[in-house]
Length: 301
Picture (cartoon, rainbow, N blue to C red):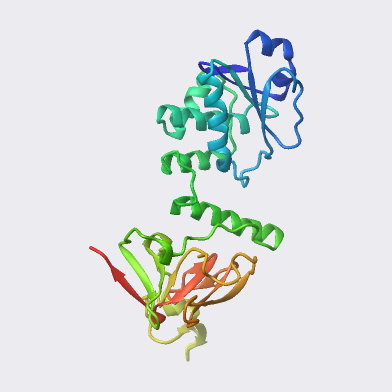
C-alpha cells in the first residue's frame, strides 16, 4: 500500500489482510471497494464496504459522497485510511481520486497524477475515468437535481435495458408544476396550459438527414437508385426530453407507452427505451417524445 496524500493510503486486498503493516502505518479506517469482500480484521479497524465490480459500466460515482464523508471524517479525527480493492489499481484509485478532487478542487487528471506520483500502478478503467470527469463537471456534487447527472443515469438505464431487457430503477425529472423557480424555457400543454417540462429537461440533438432518412430508393429510367420522398424538411416536429415523473408507466418499468398530459389527458407523444427516429432523421435513444403541435413553448428573458 502507498500513502497518496497525508493520512490516505491506496492498496490491494493483500494490503488489507496484512494486519502488522496496517498497524505499523497507524491505519484506523479501511474502505473496501470490491464485491463480496469480507473484512479481514473487523474488530481492529473501522470498515466501510462498497460492493462494486471493476467494470466500465458500473456506476461508481454514486458512492463518491458517502466515501468522501467516511474518509474525511476519519482524517479530521486524526485517523488514517486505507482504500483498497483487489489489485489496488482501479476501484480504490477512483475512490481516492474523487476524495482528492473534492478536497483540493482538482480535475480528474490532476487528482490521478497526485496518486500516480506515489503509486505508479494505478489504472482506473475507462468508465471510471469518465465518471471522474463527470464528477468535476458536476462541481463535486452528485445529485439527481442536476440534469447532467440524470443524463448519466439515463445512459445507464439504456445499457441495463440492452443487457437485461428491463431499465431497472429510473430517476425521472421533477414535475415543473411543483417547482417555484422560474425557468428560461417552459413547455406547456396546448389544451390546458399545464407546465410539462423546462429547459433542463429538454435533450437537444443534431439534425439528421431529414425526410431522406425515411425514403426508399426508386430506380430511375437509367438504372440508378434515387431517393424518393416528400420534400425535405429538417425542422424537428418533436421535442425529446428526459423521463418525467408525471409520465405514466415510468415508475412501473414500462419499456414503451403513450405520453399524455397528466392534467387533461391530451395526447402529447410517446416514449420507447429502444429509441425512435425524429422527423429530422436522427435516431434518439431512449426516446421520450413530445409533439410540438401539441404544446406551447415560452421563453423567459
